[in-house]
Amino acid sequence: MIKLKIKSGDIVRVIAGDHKGAEGKVLRVDREKNKAIVEGVNMVSKHTKPSAKNPQGGIVKKEAPIQISNISLIDPKTKETTRVGVRVEGDKKVRFSKKSNQVL
Image (cartoon, helix red, strand yellow):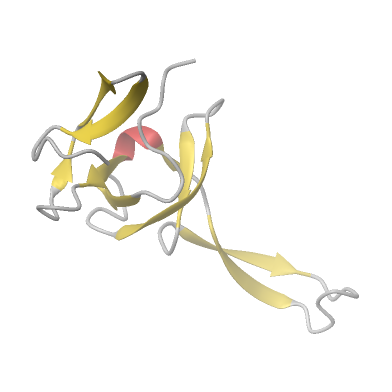
């Protein structure tokens, strides 16, 4: 399993695929499958039967996972996509933006 540099709560931009250019906040990351769920990106329609929770039933829109390699972190300073590095400051590891060299 590889070390992922994208975590939940990060703001990312899709760099490949059908949703290229879309931006959103990472809601969840699946490390085993190397996928992430991004808010408002890769929406799919799911048909649901009426139940006690949802007595109406119908079509529900929800986010589907997207491959980690197809998303890139947005640098908070320059608002552009950037690569992420890891360095040791004191006795802690911190993530930093390679474009602006700012700690994330």
